[in-house]
Amino acid sequence: METQDFCKLMAKEIEKDDLKTKKQIADLRDSLIKKHRPNTIPSLVEIMTYLPRGSYNFVIKPTRTMSGVSPVALMTKPIPCPHGRCTYCPGGPNSQFGNVPQSYTGGEPATMRAIRNNYDPYLQVFNRLEHYVLLGHSVDKIELIVMGGTFTAFDKEYQEEFIKYSFKAMNDFSKLFFEEDGTLDYPKFKKFFELPAKDFQSEERTKKIHKKLLEMKGECELKTEQEKNESVKVRCVALCIETKPDWGLLEHGNQILKLGCTRVELGIQSVYEEVIKKVNRGHTIKDTIDSIRILKDLGFKISAHYMPGLPLTDKKKDLEGMKQLFSDEDYRPDMLKIYPTMVSKGTPLYLDYKKGNFKPLTADSAAEIIAEFKESVPEYCRIQRIQRDVPTKQWEAGVELTNFRQYLFQKHKPKCKCIRCREPRKREINWDKVEIKINEYGASNGTEYFISAEDTENDLIIGFIRMRFPSESLREEITTSSAIIRELHVYGVATNIGAEGSVQHKGFGKKLLKKAEEIAKQNKKNKMIIISGIGVKKYYYNLGYEKEGPYVTKSLE
Picture (spheres, rainbow, N blue to C red):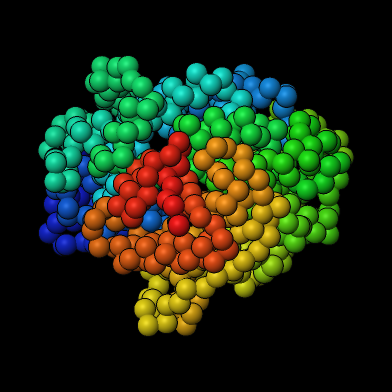
């Protein structure tokens, strides 16, 4: 049977039987495949193109949008790192994986999407938003995650071009497919993306879509696109870039503030000087400490990357190093990605491994270290990942499981208090037991307040604010009597702006903000500064805040 005919049959059966879950549809697909033997096995996204919009809004488990926003990961073009290569680093220009971004293999979902779209940010954003719409996800609130290596090492012209066309794509997608009242023009959307298609993955279809988009792309200005994005349907509520500590100092921080960045993924990898020197990181521990402090003082959220299992470490040293991230005030990141060291062909580390001079962590040994560490993680940190999003077949040695997180929790059952482990997701909240909690701690020579709304009965976190009294004033907007809110987040499935969500839009953002302002005033602060995603600024304008440079601010006097 032709794949197209098979998809039509699937759509009829889904509607007839009123199927609502991913498992029900997958089971139906499996049974019909045996009977009809289609030319190719269609993906769930492909099948959805044959259904009317609205008939499958709860087919997909919304794992990616559980935290309240829909992430859109983009890849920059391949360039080599200025300092050279770290000894463990796969990928990069002219690597054994081809011409791919530094530290990536080409097998990651985001990299494959970037290659398919010629590393063009405009095309990448449209492609990802297309998939979200097809899967029934909300695209109101987007977190742009710019990957591909050290973003601030690109020349400033490329940085600005990449970001402005990311904003333009969100703005143009809004204008093209959404009515003034915010409803999606689904027939127009399907026509534009040539849906349903005889071959969903065909090169011909991709070329047709690219031709339409490139004709629309045109010229644009960063400031204009940012201003438009404040009030369109598809808004950028957070923007994240990756960098290294030596490329994350004051000059770089000021540049990414201009672009609209709100979070920095900082590759610190280790707290040991001899280790980062051995693997040729190209920076010092002092750079790491300075970068964390400067970026926090500018208002950024910090997501640190750490690599247990590097050369010159052992289980004891790895565990002590990770615990030092929170016992030592010079670190204390807001978020953490743990990447056990993996061995890739074409790297100096691979040669050491083949000679017997390096022994990587296995799934068992890595799980043991991370499980013990997780029990000491403070409540203000969110552990985002414990394994890289790279197919295990791309590695020669190291953690051999694709479901490593699941394996770790099943085997060790760690009692973790990090934010991710306490998000509501689909768990029931006892609203009568929700309280505002305040956690004050020192970090990077400043004072931090983690103010959270929590269901104390079920140990669930509803939302939180990160407020900092900076260690120094690094910009004219930041006075010595200023407090700066680095993050305000309310958890729950991503909902349309203005619509009722499972947790969002219950007023917790305003309650948390009010509490933060009270604490700031009690500490004789007379100005509140908020680093805000471009698409959230209007929310703060309605609460009395005004635009000031890259921030929104308000007098507390």
